[in-house]
Amino acid sequence: MDLGISGKRALVCASSKGLGLGCAEALAEAGVDLVMNARGSDALEQAAENIRKTYGVSVTTVACDITTDEGRAKVLDAAGQIDILVTNAGGPPPGLWSDWDRDDFIAALDANMLTPIALMKALLPAMIDRGWGRVVNITSQSVKAPIAVLGLSNSARAGLTGYVAGTARQVAAHGVTINNLLPGIHATDRAVSLDTGVSSQQGISLDQAKAQREATIPAHRYGTRQEFGATCAFMCSQHAGFMVGQNILLDGGATNATL
Image 1 (cartoon, rainbow, N blue to C red):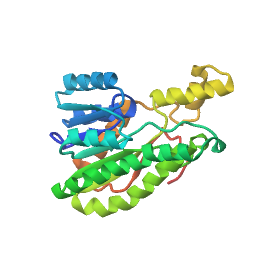
Image 2: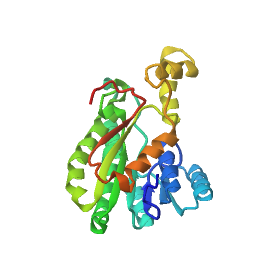
Image 3: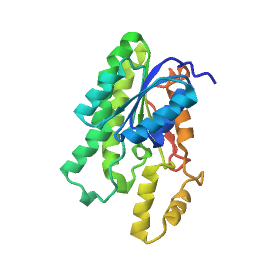
Image 4: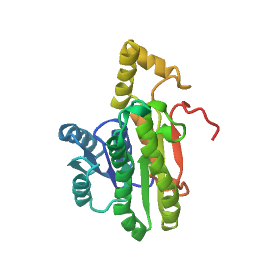
């Protein structure tokens, strides 16, 4: 399927690996030029060069922490005209409700709620002026069904979801869509981190922890970055212009819900 976005320019955050990289690769395959951001320059440059060689698109890299004012300013200064925004940041650490204090919540809000909002506020006006734009926020399945050990993530991402619900309906008439993509467990470093925690807590091997989690997913496997990226690319395509303010689950059926 021709996604109809060849020649567009996308900013993809936290895109040196994992789900962000999957999104960058899929957009590049559709002919989209990229601005890629991540904290670590080595992995970022390697990912960008692989994309250039494979897909022949232009890739600008900006190594910085997107969750800081300075980092966002650096990225936006380098980005230029952006047609597609994919927001993404690593999730906060797991724990118990009694583990977290105010500073923990502020850090989670900065990374997973306020940073996406700041990027949208910076880039939406020009999208509106041009009459076309796409925003996809990578959030979490936890906004559909909370995950007890991820209380920080539950809170911050739910706040972003509420903001998007209202904002998306205000900009849709201008040809700009905002939607959220909600991953379940995918084969990324985040999954390894979570499985390592279970392994340590339960005194089992990492493979056993992974198998235990896979058994709770109806698909009986973890997702891949490639299928996640393909879904993101469709949401950014010309064909998704009637998709407004939606929360798209990609979790192998793990969230046990009717709606």
